[in-house]
Image 1: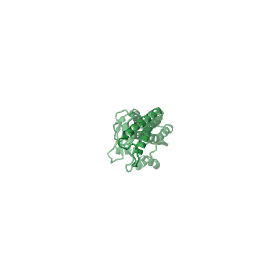
Image 2: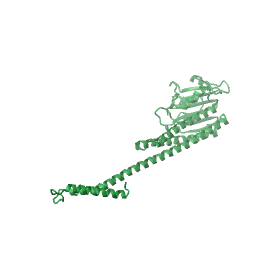
Image 3: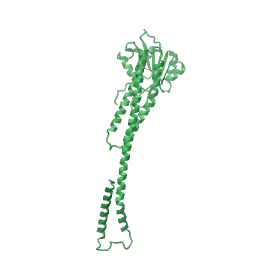
Image 4: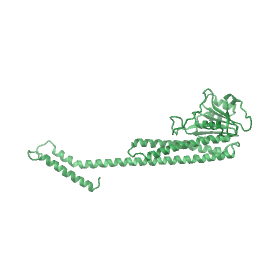
Amino acid sequence: MNEKVLSDEGDGTLPMLFGRVLDGQGGGRPISWEEVQDWRPRNDSEMLWIHLQRTHPGVQEWLEECLGLPEPTAELLTGEATRPRAFRDGNTMVATLRGINFNPGAEPEDMLSMQLWSDGKRVVTLRRLPLQTPRMTCNEVDSGNGPVDAGSLVTTLTEHLIDRMSHSIIDMNEAIDELEDGDPDDDTDEVLSKIATIRRNCLGLKRHMSPQHEALLAIANNAPGWFEDHDRREIAETIDRLRRYLDDLDISKESALVLQDDIRARAAASTERTQNMLTIVAGIFLPLSFITGLLGINVGDIPLTSPGSHGFWIIVGLCFVIFALELLIAKKLKWF
Protein backbone atom coordinates (compact mmCIF):
# COMPACT_ATOMS: atom_id res chain seq x y z
CA MET A 1 0.00 0.00 0.00
CA ASN A 2 1.39 3.36 -1.01
CA GLU A 3 0.18 5.83 1.55
CA LYS A 4 1.24 9.39 2.05
CA VAL A 5 3.24 9.75 5.24
CA LEU A 6 2.23 12.74 7.32
CA SER A 7 4.96 14.20 9.48
CA ASP A 8 4.32 15.47 12.99
CA GLU A 9 7.89 16.62 13.54
CA GLY A 10 8.66 19.87 15.34
CA ASP A 11 11.93 21.75 15.12
CA GLY A 12 13.54 19.44 17.69
CA THR A 13 14.43 22.18 20.16
CA LEU A 14 11.08 22.15 21.98
CA PRO A 15 9.03 19.26 23.34
CA MET A 16 5.91 20.47 21.51
CA LEU A 17 5.48 19.08 18.01
CA PHE A 18 2.40 21.21 17.37
CA GLY A 19 -0.38 22.90 19.30
CA ARG A 20 -3.89 24.08 18.49
CA VAL A 21 -6.57 26.01 20.33
CA LEU A 22 -9.91 24.53 19.24
CA ASP A 23 -12.66 27.08 18.75
CA GLY A 24 -15.59 24.75 19.47
CA GLN A 25 -16.82 24.84 15.86
CA GLY A 26 -14.44 22.35 14.23
CA GLY A 27 -11.60 24.77 13.63
CA GLY A 28 -8.67 26.08 15.60
CA ARG A 29 -5.62 28.32 15.64
CA PRO A 30 -1.96 27.45 16.16
CA ILE A 31 -0.37 28.23 19.50
CA SER A 32 3.29 28.53 20.41
CA TRP A 33 5.06 26.76 23.24
CA GLU A 34 5.48 30.08 25.07
CA GLU A 35 1.75 30.79 24.86
CA VAL A 36 0.95 27.32 26.16
CA GLN A 37 2.63 28.08 29.50
CA ASP A 38 0.07 30.72 30.48
CA TRP A 39 -2.87 29.66 28.32
CA ARG A 40 -6.37 30.38 29.59
CA PRO A 41 -9.56 29.88 27.54
CA ARG A 42 -11.02 33.11 26.17
CA ASN A 43 -14.52 31.62 26.27
CA ASP A 44 -16.28 28.39 27.20
CA SER A 45 -15.85 26.95 23.69
CA GLU A 46 -12.07 27.15 23.55
CA MET A 47 -9.94 24.11 24.32
CA LEU A 48 -6.17 23.56 24.17
CA TRP A 49 -4.57 20.59 22.41
CA ILE A 50 -0.80 20.08 22.35
CA HIS A 51 1.14 17.18 20.91
CA LEU A 52 4.47 16.46 22.63
CA GLN A 53 7.60 14.42 22.05
CA ARG A 54 7.56 12.40 25.26
CA THR A 55 11.27 11.57 25.17
CA HIS A 56 12.29 15.24 25.09
CA PRO A 57 14.17 16.27 28.26
CA GLY A 58 12.00 17.93 30.86
CA VAL A 59 8.60 16.74 29.60
CA GLN A 60 7.80 14.80 32.78
CA GLU A 61 8.77 17.77 34.95
CA TRP A 62 6.61 20.08 32.83
CA LEU A 63 3.62 17.77 33.20
CA GLU A 64 4.03 17.74 36.97
CA GLU A 65 4.74 21.44 37.47
CA CYS A 66 2.56 23.14 34.84
CA LEU A 67 -0.36 20.72 34.64
CA GLY A 68 -0.19 19.52 38.23
CA LEU A 69 -0.12 15.83 37.31
CA PRO A 70 0.82 13.35 40.03
CA GLU A 71 4.25 11.83 39.57
CA PRO A 72 2.94 8.29 38.77
CA THR A 73 0.67 9.70 36.05
CA ALA A 74 3.47 11.80 34.58
CA GLU A 75 5.75 8.74 34.59
CA LEU A 76 3.09 6.71 32.82
CA LEU A 77 2.68 9.33 30.11
CA THR A 78 6.41 9.60 29.45
CA GLY A 79 7.52 6.03 30.22
CA GLU A 80 8.04 2.96 28.06
CA ALA A 81 4.97 1.04 29.29
CA THR A 82 2.96 1.01 26.06
CA ARG A 83 0.33 -1.64 26.76
CA PRO A 84 -3.08 -0.04 26.00
CA ARG A 85 -4.94 1.06 29.09
CA ALA A 86 -7.22 3.87 30.22
CA PHE A 87 -8.43 5.11 33.58
CA ARG A 88 -10.11 8.05 35.23
CA ASP A 89 -8.22 10.17 37.74
CA GLY A 90 -10.74 12.54 39.30
CA ASN A 91 -11.92 14.82 36.50
CA THR A 92 -9.11 13.77 34.15
CA MET A 93 -8.71 10.92 31.70
CA VAL A 94 -5.42 9.10 31.17
CA ALA A 95 -4.94 6.62 28.35
CA THR A 96 -2.28 4.76 26.41
CA LEU A 97 -3.36 3.66 22.94
CA ARG A 98 -1.65 1.92 20.05
CA GLY A 99 -1.69 2.48 16.31
CA ILE A 100 -0.36 0.80 13.19
CA ASN A 101 3.18 1.77 12.24
CA PHE A 102 3.14 3.12 8.68
CA ASN A 103 6.60 4.67 8.87
CA PRO A 104 8.93 3.64 6.00
CA GLY A 105 10.56 0.26 6.55
CA ALA A 106 8.26 -0.73 9.43
CA GLU A 107 6.20 -3.88 9.67
CA PRO A 108 2.48 -3.64 10.51
CA GLU A 109 2.96 -5.42 13.82
CA ASP A 110 5.54 -2.79 14.87
CA MET A 111 2.92 -0.86 16.82
CA LEU A 112 3.30 2.75 17.88
CA SER A 113 1.96 4.09 21.16
CA MET A 114 0.24 7.37 21.91
CA GLN A 115 -0.26 8.62 25.45
CA LEU A 116 -3.18 10.92 26.20
CA TRP A 117 -4.24 13.12 29.11
CA SER A 118 -7.22 15.48 29.33
CA ASP A 119 -9.14 17.44 31.93
CA GLY A 120 -11.88 18.53 29.53
CA LYS A 121 -10.32 21.90 28.67
CA ARG A 122 -6.83 20.72 27.83
CA VAL A 123 -5.75 17.64 25.89
CA VAL A 124 -2.13 16.50 25.83
CA THR A 125 -1.02 13.74 23.48
CA LEU A 126 2.48 12.32 23.54
CA ARG A 127 4.47 9.98 21.31
CA ARG A 128 8.02 8.67 20.89
CA LEU A 129 8.14 7.85 17.15
CA PRO A 130 6.28 9.69 14.36
CA LEU A 131 2.58 8.86 14.44
CA GLN A 132 0.28 9.93 11.64
CA THR A 133 -3.03 9.95 13.52
CA PRO A 134 -2.45 13.21 15.47
CA ARG A 135 -1.30 15.01 12.33
CA MET A 136 -4.36 13.78 10.41
CA THR A 137 -6.61 15.15 13.16
CA CYS A 138 -4.64 18.41 13.24
CA ASN A 139 -5.14 18.80 9.48
CA GLU A 140 -8.88 18.36 10.01
CA VAL A 141 -8.82 21.12 12.63
CA ASP A 142 -6.89 23.41 10.28
CA SER A 143 -9.47 22.80 7.55
CA GLY A 144 -12.36 23.58 9.92
CA ASN A 145 -13.72 20.02 9.97
CA GLY A 146 -12.14 18.82 13.18
CA PRO A 147 -13.40 17.97 16.68
CA VAL A 148 -15.21 20.64 18.67
CA ASP A 149 -14.30 19.72 22.25
CA ALA A 150 -12.12 17.43 24.33
CA GLY A 151 -14.52 14.50 24.14
CA SER A 152 -14.81 14.64 20.35
CA LEU A 153 -11.03 15.04 20.06
CA VAL A 154 -10.51 11.83 22.05
CA THR A 155 -13.07 9.97 19.95
CA THR A 156 -11.60 11.31 16.70
CA LEU A 157 -8.10 10.19 17.64
CA THR A 158 -9.29 6.71 18.62
CA GLU A 159 -11.36 6.40 15.44
CA HIS A 160 -8.36 7.24 13.27
CA LEU A 161 -6.17 4.78 15.18
CA ILE A 162 -8.66 1.96 14.71
CA ASP A 163 -9.64 2.79 11.13
CA ARG A 164 -6.04 2.51 10.01
CA MET A 165 -6.09 -1.14 11.10
CA SER A 166 -8.35 -1.85 8.12
CA HIS A 167 -5.55 -0.87 5.70
CA SER A 168 -3.24 -3.58 7.03
CA ILE A 169 -6.04 -6.16 7.13
CA ILE A 170 -7.03 -5.39 3.52
CA ASP A 171 -3.39 -5.63 2.44
CA MET A 172 -3.00 -9.03 4.10
CA ASN A 173 -6.25 -10.35 2.58
CA GLU A 174 -5.16 -9.18 -0.87
CA ALA A 175 -1.80 -10.89 -0.37
CA ILE A 176 -3.58 -14.13 0.60
CA ASP A 177 -5.83 -13.89 -2.49
CA GLU A 178 -2.79 -13.38 -4.73
CA LEU A 179 -1.08 -16.42 -3.23
CA GLU A 180 -4.24 -18.52 -3.66
CA ASP A 181 -4.47 -17.50 -7.33
CA GLY A 182 -0.76 -17.88 -7.92
CA ASP A 183 0.98 -20.37 -10.18
CA PRO A 184 1.19 -23.82 -8.51
CA ASP A 185 4.68 -24.14 -9.95
CA ASP A 186 5.95 -21.11 -8.00
CA ASP A 187 8.78 -21.64 -5.55
CA THR A 188 7.11 -23.39 -2.61
CA ASP A 189 9.63 -22.15 -0.05
CA GLU A 190 9.09 -18.54 -1.13
CA VAL A 191 5.30 -18.87 -1.01
CA LEU A 192 5.42 -20.50 2.42
CA SER A 193 7.72 -17.71 3.62
CA LYS A 194 5.17 -15.10 2.49
CA ILE A 195 2.36 -16.97 4.25
CA ALA A 196 4.42 -17.23 7.43
CA THR A 197 4.94 -13.45 7.31
CA ILE A 198 1.19 -12.88 6.95
CA ARG A 199 0.45 -15.18 9.88
CA ARG A 200 3.09 -13.45 11.98
CA ASN A 201 1.57 -10.06 11.15
CA CYS A 202 -1.91 -11.31 12.08
CA LEU A 203 -0.68 -12.66 15.40
CA GLY A 204 1.25 -9.48 16.14
CA LEU A 205 -1.72 -7.22 15.38
CA LYS A 206 -4.07 -9.40 17.40
CA ARG A 207 -1.70 -9.51 20.36
CA HIS A 208 -1.16 -5.75 20.38
CA MET A 209 -4.69 -4.60 19.53
CA SER A 210 -6.71 -6.89 21.80
CA PRO A 211 -5.78 -4.90 24.95
CA GLN A 212 -6.93 -1.76 23.14
CA HIS A 213 -10.45 -3.15 23.28
CA GLU A 214 -10.31 -3.12 27.08
CA ALA A 215 -8.87 0.41 27.09
CA LEU A 216 -11.70 1.73 24.92
CA LEU A 217 -14.25 0.00 27.13
CA ALA A 218 -12.72 1.76 30.12
CA ILE A 219 -13.07 5.10 28.35
CA ALA A 220 -16.69 4.41 27.42
CA ASN A 221 -17.70 3.18 30.87
CA ASN A 222 -15.63 5.31 33.25
CA ALA A 223 -14.87 8.62 31.53
CA PRO A 224 -15.31 11.92 33.42
CA GLY A 225 -18.45 14.02 33.10
CA TRP A 226 -17.06 16.24 30.34
CA PHE A 227 -17.04 13.14 28.12
CA GLU A 228 -20.62 13.47 26.88
CA ASP A 229 -23.17 10.85 25.91
CA HIS A 230 -22.61 11.31 22.18
CA ASP A 231 -18.88 10.79 22.77
CA ARG A 232 -19.65 7.53 24.53
CA ARG A 233 -21.78 6.45 21.57
CA GLU A 234 -18.90 7.27 19.22
CA ILE A 235 -16.51 5.23 21.36
CA ALA A 236 -19.03 2.36 21.38
CA GLU A 237 -19.09 2.38 17.57
CA THR A 238 -15.29 2.40 17.51
CA ILE A 239 -15.27 -0.58 19.88
CA ASP A 240 -17.64 -2.47 17.56
CA ARG A 241 -15.39 -1.65 14.62
CA LEU A 242 -12.36 -2.89 16.53
CA ARG A 243 -14.17 -6.15 17.32
CA ARG A 244 -14.89 -6.64 13.62
CA TYR A 245 -11.27 -6.00 12.76
CA LEU A 246 -10.11 -8.48 15.38
CA ASP A 247 -12.53 -11.04 13.91
CA ASP A 248 -11.15 -10.26 10.44
CA LEU A 249 -7.65 -10.89 11.76
CA ASP A 250 -8.75 -14.32 12.97
CA ILE A 251 -10.26 -15.05 9.56
CA SER A 252 -7.10 -13.89 7.79
CA LYS A 253 -4.97 -16.01 10.07
CA GLU A 254 -7.12 -19.09 9.45
CA SER A 255 -7.14 -18.44 5.69
CA ALA A 256 -3.36 -18.23 5.70
CA LEU A 257 -3.17 -21.46 7.71
CA VAL A 258 -5.50 -23.30 5.29
CA LEU A 259 -3.48 -22.03 2.32
CA GLN A 260 -0.24 -23.05 4.03
CA ASP A 261 -1.56 -26.56 4.69
CA ASP A 262 -2.82 -26.84 1.10
CA ILE A 263 0.54 -25.83 -0.36
CA ARG A 264 2.39 -28.20 1.94
CA ALA A 265 -0.01 -31.01 0.98
CA ARG A 266 0.54 -30.31 -2.73
CA ALA A 267 4.29 -30.24 -2.23
CA ALA A 268 4.18 -33.51 -0.29
CA ALA A 269 2.01 -35.13 -2.98
CA SER A 270 4.41 -33.98 -5.70
CA THR A 271 7.36 -35.35 -3.75
CA GLU A 272 5.56 -38.65 -3.24
CA ARG A 273 4.78 -38.95 -6.96
CA THR A 274 8.41 -38.30 -7.80
CA GLN A 275 9.58 -40.89 -5.29
CA ASN A 276 7.11 -43.45 -6.64
CA MET A 277 8.31 -42.87 -10.18
CA LEU A 278 11.93 -43.22 -9.12
CA THR A 279 11.05 -46.45 -7.31
CA ILE A 280 9.31 -47.83 -10.42
CA VAL A 281 12.26 -46.91 -12.66
CA ALA A 282 14.69 -48.48 -10.20
CA GLY A 283 12.53 -51.62 -10.03
CA ILE A 284 12.41 -51.92 -13.83
CA PHE A 285 16.14 -51.58 -14.30
CA LEU A 286 17.14 -53.75 -11.34
CA PRO A 287 16.78 -57.14 -13.20
CA LEU A 288 18.52 -55.68 -16.26
CA SER A 289 21.37 -54.43 -14.11
CA PHE A 290 21.62 -57.84 -12.46
CA ILE A 291 21.91 -59.64 -15.82
CA THR A 292 24.47 -57.24 -17.27
CA GLY A 293 26.43 -57.25 -14.05
CA LEU A 294 26.42 -61.04 -13.85
CA LEU A 295 27.60 -61.46 -17.44
CA GLY A 296 30.21 -58.75 -17.03
CA ILE A 297 32.23 -60.41 -14.27
CA ASN A 298 35.81 -61.10 -15.25
CA VAL A 299 35.95 -64.92 -14.75
CA GLY A 300 36.27 -67.84 -17.09
CA ASP A 301 33.45 -69.87 -18.70
CA ILE A 302 31.18 -66.85 -19.22
CA PRO A 303 28.56 -68.10 -21.75
CA LEU A 304 28.02 -66.54 -25.16
CA THR A 305 31.54 -65.13 -25.31
CA SER A 306 32.94 -67.43 -27.96
CA PRO A 307 33.49 -65.99 -31.46
CA GLY A 308 30.47 -66.33 -33.72
CA SER A 309 27.96 -66.92 -30.86
CA HIS A 310 26.32 -63.48 -31.29
CA GLY A 311 26.21 -63.24 -27.51
CA PHE A 312 25.89 -59.45 -27.41
CA TRP A 313 22.76 -59.37 -29.55
CA ILE A 314 21.24 -62.27 -27.66
CA ILE A 315 21.71 -60.43 -24.35
CA VAL A 316 20.32 -57.21 -25.85
CA GLY A 317 17.25 -59.04 -27.11
CA LEU A 318 16.79 -60.75 -23.74
CA CYS A 319 16.97 -57.36 -21.98
CA PHE A 320 14.33 -55.93 -24.33
CA VAL A 321 12.03 -58.88 -23.63
CA ILE A 322 12.46 -58.51 -19.87
CA PHE A 323 11.93 -54.73 -20.16
CA ALA A 324 8.70 -55.21 -22.12
CA LEU A 325 7.39 -57.75 -19.60
CA GLU A 326 8.16 -55.40 -16.71
CA LEU A 327 6.32 -52.53 -18.43
CA LEU A 328 3.33 -54.79 -19.03
CA ILE A 329 3.28 -55.89 -15.38
CA ALA A 330 3.67 -52.31 -14.11
CA LYS A 331 0.80 -51.14 -16.30
CA LYS A 332 -1.39 -54.01 -15.17
CA LEU A 333 -0.64 -53.12 -11.52
CA LYS A 334 -1.39 -49.43 -12.33
CA TRP A 335 1.97 -48.22 -11.12
CA PHE A 336 1.76 -45.41 -13.68
